[in-house]
Amino acid sequence: MSFTKNCLHFIDGQFVESEDGKRFTNVNPATEEEIGWVAEGGKREIDRAVEAARRALKGEWGRYSIRDRIAVVRRIGDLILERKEEFARLESLDTGKPYTLSLNLDIPRAAYNFHFFADYLHSVGTESYQMDAGQLHYAIRRPIGVVGLINPWNLPLLLLTWKMAPALAMGNTVVAKPAELTPMTATLLAEVIKEAGVPDGVVNVVHGFGPNSAGSFLTEHPDVNAISFTGETHTGKIIMAAASKSLKRLSFELGGKNPYIIFEDANLDEVIETTIQSSFSNQGEVCLAGSRIYVQRPIYDQFLERFVERTKQLIVGDPFDPKTNVGALISKEHLERVNGYLDIARNEGRILLGGKRPEGMEKGYYLEPTIVVDLPEQCRVVKEEVFGPVASILPFDTEEEVIARANATEYGLSATIWTNDLRRAHRVAHQIEAGVIWINTWFLRDLRTPFGGMKHSGIGREGGAHSVEFYSELTNITVKL
Ligand code: NAD
Image (tube, rainbow, N blue to C red):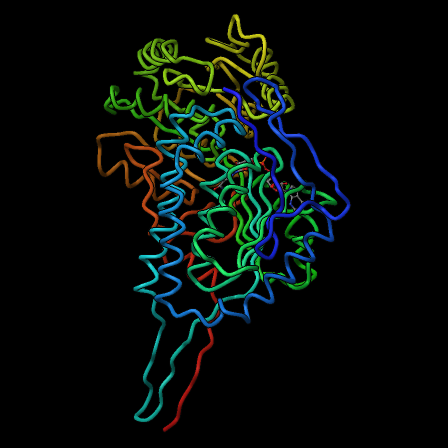
């Protein structure tokens, strides 16, 4: 499918090029064809966007009632749904993910982020404490100010809106820096923001790169009050150092190497179907992917046989073919990185299935869904985030052993436990070091729940009350009558 979109910045309600005219090329990872150019922002664009966002805090937006804010945040969600096919087409062109996935998951969820936080705002309150007679404390909640939103390429619109919706609901203004590889849906979102009637300067989108570019200028800017970042752990460390100069509030959703534990009493039919999703959906480019699959030894062979058979049925190919299950990886560099891990897997273990470009596909950054076995626990493929359609299967014997192995990582984002023994499920969940744990399911999300990672997988939690907390500032007022 041919479709192009050039991406301009959105600053103070206007679509603009960079002052120095710099642009970069956007490539469709499924065809390797150019699909447009992107304005490359620098210090000047970030400065202008932050100035506009700061001005907007004191303008019409600052005088919006809660009902006005609820209405406009809701309207953004409505407009995304009205244009969902257009959003889904752009998301798949940019990322290489199947159009059916964009249309049925990424885009509706992006709209729901706005609808959810519009609804949630109705019930946001604060604390009040009475001391002795005539002594009362109460807290008021205010916007934190200008918030910088920095996002990765794997779930571009879903993750941008996951931050933008609560930021706007709480009355902040934002400067977003989308991933350089996936600028399109953020640009379309800016059109929707304008159409929804959001006052100029409340939402700004500046395209560009990370280091010494729009990303780092945003994190260093003294007039930005907070940064919400999703991306690699290494980038998080750099952003934390940069943001420390002006003591910004930070929320980090970082990488993961998530243990996925299957006990011998699990329901294998459910396990197989869900493990196909947790390993290969979105080409495995999911921070929550169950990328270390520990299977209890008595069912190891049976699991492997069924998992291989089911994986063979997956169709890799054109993201716009409705039959496609697995699309293209995001870029040439990323495919090379994943192939580097497969070289390690070949040397230290065994590739049981896949591990190569699908036959007959000359163009596009495709990789067959890959199953790896016989890896030593210390192998880099078991320890590091591969972020591709690569499932490592590892046998284990006892509960104690698998807990220790699951926790032997610097990451702590999510974990999955499969067992029909309720007490064991909870016992294990209480010992796994992860911010999000699923029992007998995967990726089941409720936006009210705390979301985020421990250890090197993140700082802070977002979702429901946790997002409200991050995107607002509390002042306690004490009265003596
Ligand atoms: P990345 O860290 O390379 O880039 C993310 C964003 O940060 C991009 O917009 C990039 O331009 C920007 N950036 C890069 N260097 C910067 C700098 N020095 N200063 C400011 N901004 C900078 O990550 P990626 O490769 O785009 O995304 C994949 C990573 O994201 C994986 O590690 C994945 O696990 C993680 N991720 C985590 C979650 C979560 O919820 N925990 C969700 C999705 C993805």
